[in-house]
Image 1 (cartoon, rainbow, N blue to C red):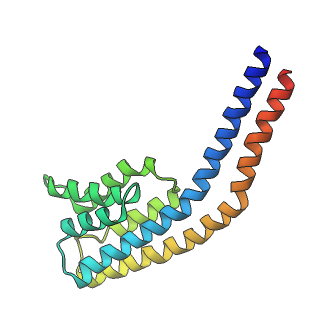
Image 2: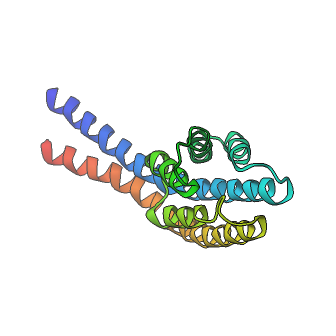
Image 3: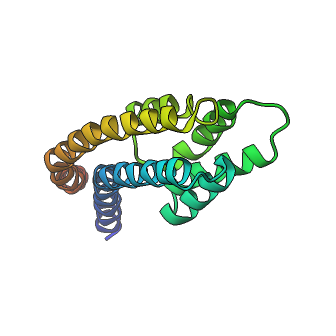
Length: 172
């Protein structure tokens, strides 16, 4: 009886782990899409609305929502309490703080940091170019993330269950 309970616990834990890994594959494309939308909203606020950067970041972050919107909200908060640091430094710190809560990879982080180098330092049209470039790069990464999702999501779920089943059978 005790072996049966242990086997069920192992099977449940390994199945949960497989579904957890599969969840990261399904969250990544959605978060990339949210990041693209956020950068497009930020571009609109900066270029067409002529909104100051702090308010543009705050508005974008509140419209996108967590975990991606947290990057924009944290950046605006850091810029408000800025004690002489550059805009890029505040942006980088916001990205570093919020990144662990996302399912995105280092490539998306580098794209986002590259886009942040122009924020607040150049004129509106140059910022627009940098944001457009980042959106295009994220589009490519989004396609790759969807391919990975199609390829690995089902496999992770199956391997989690089957791996647990194997361990449970070996215990019996």
